[in-house]
Image (cartoon, rainbow, N blue to C red; front, side):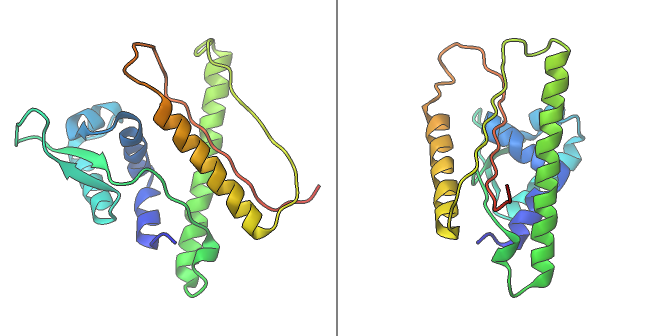
Length: 182
């Protein structure tokens, strides 16, 4: 179960973008993050400290030995939670549900931006991927499915050789599995 402070720290819009940036690019300097996210250096530094307090990022030494610059990396690459994880705290359950709603909005926004870019001729070489299915599962089987999907995504991610000279673009993958009706 995630500590609610981790969930609320990451699901601030700018902090989530910082998390995503570090997930894609690895260790980065504050100024580079600031430029990439079109935000002020002071704001990025503030939000990095908030993420550091939550145990999501950590400071690292400047790879060039310059002690005047601030470099950061992720301490973790994923989070999983449910509002049901907080049965003893209605306030924490409410925060977890709101974070989940933010995640869903972000997923839909990304999908809509991709469709827009695709229609405008950008990303012409990239076809999207869509898959859905319907089946039966117990709560334990649904949890097993989630674990298997996460393991597959981690394996796929780890097998990509980003130093092979090929041109790549960031790819967003999301999957949801939940009880439903036909």
